[in-house]
Picture 1 (cartoon, each protein chain N blue to C red):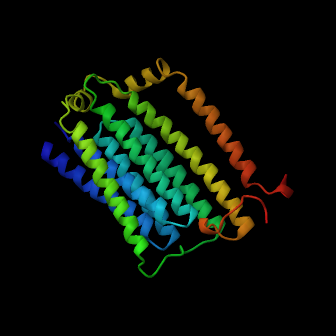
Picture 2: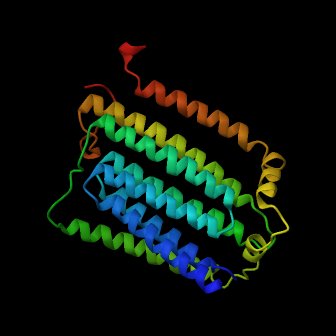
Picture 3: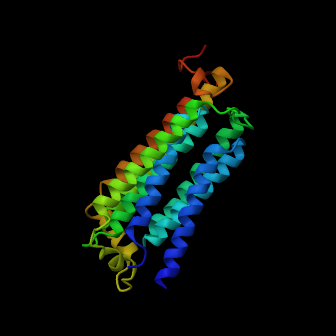
Length: 174
Length: 104
C-alpha cells in the first residue's frame, strides 16, 4: 500500500510540474489558463496526500473554480488570443533558465538538509488516525485559537471586492 | 510512513522555481500573475506539509493555508482589475511598455 501511494505521489508531482511549465510556455492564452487549472488540481491532490481534505476542497473551489474563472474573464475582456513570444533564442533566456535551476537546487538541498532527517511521526498520526475527525479538529481550532482569522478574511475580501470594482469600473459609468 | 516529506519539499521548491522563472521571463501581465499564483501555491504546500508532519499534531499550518488561499484570491481579483484598466488605457498589457497607471 505504501509503495502504491508513493508511486501515485510521484505521478502527481510530475503532472503538476509539467502543467506549471506548460502554463508559462504555451502561446495560447486559453491553454495557459487550462494548464493553470490542472496545476492547481495537482496541488490540491498533494493536499489530499497530506491528509488535509478540507484544504483540498477549498483549493478546488477557490483556486480551481474562482481564480481560474477570473483569469478566463480577464482574458476574454482584454481580447487576447496569443501571447507575444520571443521566437528566437537569446542568451538572456539561458541566464534566466540558469537562475531558475540554481534557485531550485539551492532550495531543494537546503530544505532536504534541514528537514530531510526529521523524525516524521506526525504524518502517521494525521493520515492514519481514524479515531480523530481532522475536519472537526480544524473547525475547533478555527473557532477557538484562531477565531480572529475569519473576521479578518471577511474584511479583507470585502475591501478587495470593493477595490476591484472601483478600479475596473469606468468613470462615466458611475 | 505513507509518503515521505521530501516529496512535498521537492514539489514546492520546483513549483517555486518555475514561478520565479515565469516572473523574470514573461512580459504579459496575465502570465506574470499566473507565475505569482504558482509561487503562492508552493508556499502553501510547505505550510500544509509541515503541519501534517508535525510530531505533536498541531494543524496551524492548515489554517495559514486557508488564509493564504483567501489572500491570493483577493490579490488575483485586484491584479486582474488593474490589468483590465490598463488594457482600456493602452490597448495592451505588456509590462515592458507600461510606465504609468494614469490615463494617457
